[in-house]
Structures are given as structure tokens and as C-alpha cells.
Image (cartoon, rainbow, N blue to C red; front, side, top):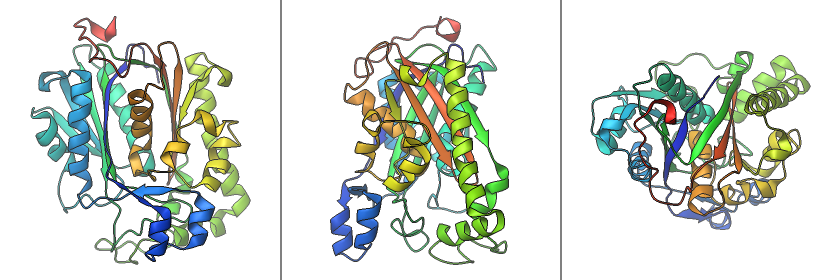
Length: 352
């Protein structure tokens, strides 16, 4: 999609203290094979619900953007797992706790691609009306039993708890959005349900959830080779289209923000098919955080911005994939100091 005149003006995270993988193994939470295979060093573990983590991340992002309630025209909250209540709107909770205005607030459910899906929806919302100023995008999850075993529910992925937030603005910011592409493959949606019957309530098929059982059904249905080829092809398509729309070659990219998955999955889906050097990515840091569901991309961007790893003129690519199945890629150009004072408000449309 065309994204002329949109910027990231602030980011924020709320990450609890991580638990070392070896400590989890010694406590019987996982086995030694999982620790060695995934190469996950530690994972963030929280006693607080995802929406509360999102609220605190949002407050930091709004402060970094210098954005008050009057500038937020939409709140989008993306999540992956249970938010703590049934028949409840967590986006409104985030809005109440972090923004305090009366704009539209909407929950986004696209699994691990949720944060990037929210970014695309927020971009379209801003572009639809030149009077709109900014969109607050948040994510927040706590992966816990009895429904979710962070070490075993999705083999090869270790899930971490945390909240993230990003302010997308049409008035200016430290990173200009050059392109944003999403590719989907709805024929793979059974990866999230297998052949389980539709249930009348959560966790009626099994508890904890087993992505491994669902994935096995998909591989039987389509064949392992066809599924693996489709996964790589979708990721490459989104990546190559995003670079093309941004007018860049892969060699022009300075930093990559990738999902925080186990190392075999990283090699298969990102490092090898896209030709990305792991040292140019956030994975060395993310392997100490765990997979934040919908929030890896925002958290990774915040990490680069807050540590001074990005400088004016550099490019940064955010890459995402979500089961059931969608791939999103965004290309950013750094136009201001991410670690500096809040970007000055520009009242003219589209950041001109």
C-alpha cells in the first residue's frame, strides 16, 4: 500500500524480568533438548495480564512521541492469547489507562502478525482523512497455563510475556514509513485448528493448546514439502515487494527486526531464504526475550531506537509472520534521533 507521509513518532515497551532457559530446565518447565535446539537464552515471564503490560508500554510511547490525548485518533490493540476476561474489549482498557480520550478503539486478532496488521490498518486510517493526526498501536500478552505452555505449546518457539506500543503519525516522527506489504495464504489457516471440531468454549479440545498437533494435520493434508515451500515463498514475496516499493535493494538495508523464534525456525524462514545476516538483526537480543506474540516487531524497533543502534539516513526493515497465515514487511527510513527529545509536532498534513 502507499504510505506517503507517515512516520513512527514514538515507541515503548514493558518487558518483565526474564527467566534463564537453564533455570526453566532445572525447574522442570522444559527439557534440555528444547534449550539447546532453540538457542533461546531466556524468556520474559510476568504475573500481570497482557493488557496491563500494554498500558504501561503505551504511556512510554506516547511520552516519547510527545502526543497527548487530542492527537490520538485511533487505538489498535493486537493480541495473541487470552486477555484476562471474556466478552471484554481490551483495546478500550488500553485506551482508558493510557490515552484517556474517546476515539475509536479496536482489538486486532491476527496472531503473531497482529502488530504489523495493526500498523497497516492504522496507516490506512490516517491516509483516509488528512485531518487525522496519529494512531496508537499496542500489543500485550501473557502466555501461561492452564491454556498455554510457553515452552511446549508451539515446539521451536518459546513465548515471552510483554507489552509494546508504537505511535504512527501523519505529522512527523523519527522514522518515515517507506513501504508496507502484507501477503496472506488463507489455505493454511488449519495450522491453527487442525481437525479439531469447533468448540462451545475455550480449551474444550485440549489444554494446554498444541500447535504441534494442528501442524501435523496440515502437513498430512498438503504434504510437508508443499507447506514448507509455501511458507518460504510467502515470506519472500512480502519482503521483495516491500523493498521494491521502497526503492531499495537488500544491500541497502542497515538493520532488520525479526520475530524472536527458535534458531531453527529463524534459519528456515528468515536467515537462509532472505539472505539476512543474523548479526544485522535483533535476534541476538530477542533470543533473550522470547516470542512476544504480536509484539516482536515493535519491541525490536524500540530496542534499536533506545540503544542508539539507528542513526539518521539508515534503513530498517520490520519482518513479520503469523500462523493461519500472513506475512508483513515494513521498510522504515530513519529521519531523526530516535533516542532524542520527542519529535516536534507539525500541524501541516502528512508531515510536510
